[in-house]
Image: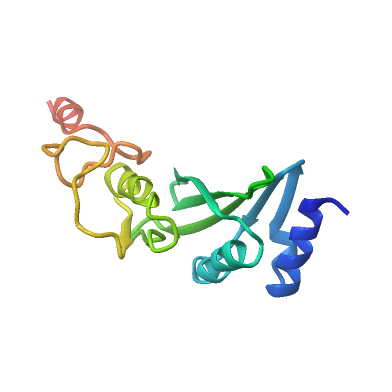
Length: 156
């Protein structure tokens, strides 16, 4: 049995019903689709019991109906675990993970600035990566976003 198959079995044993949402597309890559309300338990299990001790990044995706967040975790042996959750497009929010990985703050600030996703537990701080004078409620990675200047020109 491969390392990835072993991880899949451990996830399935701990979280009944998750096995069909765990994919291994190639060696050393595992993808899990999780409901937002089960994310924290799967995330903590991955860190505390499966040994995923490094956060590589957090990816945000605008899928029009919702936003997806993918948390990319790695083990020292090079295996990557990608946990994907979806949050509402109308009121997007997720919990901060900086209590586990303080370096996650920069990725979470990107989700706030670029997508408008509220990150609960993220302390106040400087904007990133947008300039401090960037217009409020302007999220350039949303698929429906148009700069106000383009909107004004369309109205002419």
